[in-house]
Length: 94
Image (tube, rainbow, N blue to C red; front, top):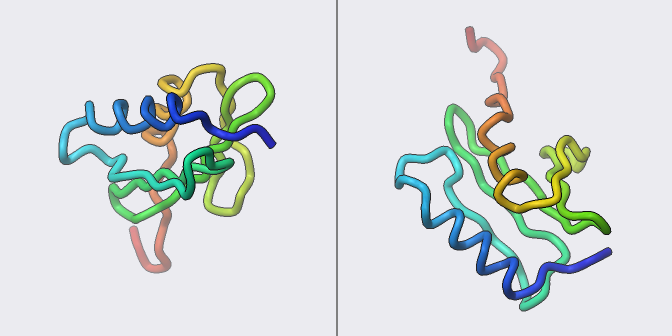
């Protein structure tokens, strides 16, 4: 599996820091200098985390269960997909 370069990690951080403080994308995390997965954290109605991975042609974003739901060639396009994911529904919630 391809890994993230330090420049890509810097780009993720730059994109995240460019958002307003109350944006639903609340943070990100990675382990090591060249990780194979970056976790994106989102909160609107519910906290969620999404694994972001490198592919041969770009990037893939998966849901909470690890199922890829979006692929793109650029980080900026892919990270916008976090906003499009609906909040989780809780039993009894209308």
